[in-house]
Image (cartoon, rainbow, N blue to C red):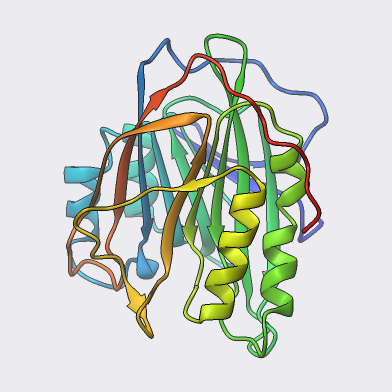
Length: 265
């Protein structure tokens, strides 16, 4: 089985392996909503107390929850399948009784998903990302990209490769986009590269009045970027349940959206 292109999908029926297909699976569409609520959180492998309490209080009412460093423990899978229709995970690391990687929880199943993995240059442990597409009631597709960026590297070469791997997908997509996660932007060079990429893709960062995102060397690590949507509200939730604070945003859905022109990176 390829280590680069499959996703584990958790539902109340159990776990199945999903491979990308050129054909979209049209099962259910997002309801005719005016607003979409999203939570983004590096859950720190569920190593601290109260992570489940925080999810119960702040996550289950969201339409999408994008987790990084998610371990497929029974408690997390039970929460996901009890409150969401689908939980898709990229198994960046597989152990006999558990997988670890980004996980996207959604109220409706995606019509398409694509997994990404990128090895850390020194530790050789992979970081993961996941693109999922959801059909909207008006026929458009919402693209959601859940990212955990590589961390330890000399220079930004590997980091650039990982970020650029999403470029073609974003440029060729005409619907709304949510691009979010733990980008490990602990250096000015990484932050500059990320902003350069998102600007060229027509993506805008969500701003937080109570900006208590995790910082390293005075640079925030977690971001939510968007296109074809309007920010209705946003907040950072302070917690000791992880070494990262969750980001929450509610988007207003725009009626139409103009995709940006393609640009070289």
